[in-house]
Length: 304
Image (cartoon, rainbow, N blue to C red):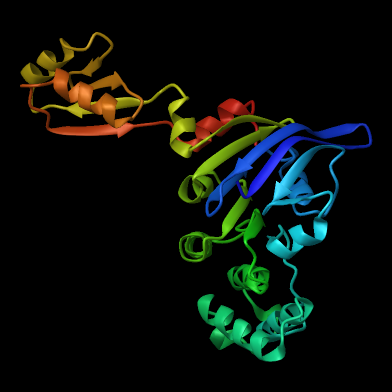
């Protein structure tokens, strides 16, 4: 595991924020941490990235203990926070070169790294423009590019697409996916966008009240929620009645010529339904499963 945490506890004064958080994040994956405002997502990122210390518990990132070997952790990670860390008075190129200097890269290496990142993030034409003129999407791309100057093995992205328009958000999603697919980077993502976690993450943890209340793949979490069903449409009432007679839990709509039966969306379930229907022609079949919004609202008391 690239990131492990056991029993993380953190309070601010008398206010507990984390109450024993356990996490395991596999190398070369996107891990999403979901939760309502105040659940402890940013505090978790701050502890794992050595910005603050936990009151109790242990954590390791890229093989290093965050408490005892903070320098090694910081050398292996990159962090993109909720708010841009750019210098508005510098150009895109100057911001990246500044970051290269902070990483103690030789000037030729820094220039090559900067040029490559500007091209990768489609900012080459804007390289000499001051950041103050950039759109929100351009700023977030440059912010992430600066995180990559040091070639981190692990990247923490704390709500990286907050405030972006849908097109810019999807561009960021493509970039994040390419980091994992092409560079084998591990991404630890916090987000308020459920679609974002569903699209990007191979595993999701839901944090509420300072505790992890559920964890699994997006599909596993969605299958836990009631309401999944298979909907079938038939050519006529005789076929509908024939099918309905084979499913005790089915709900038929004779006007719409549809039959709805409970189903969890798994291939095995679908195969069993089709086996029961053998000999009854089906015009159309669709599978409906709860989404991460349903999971989120169910597990966090319906608040966001």
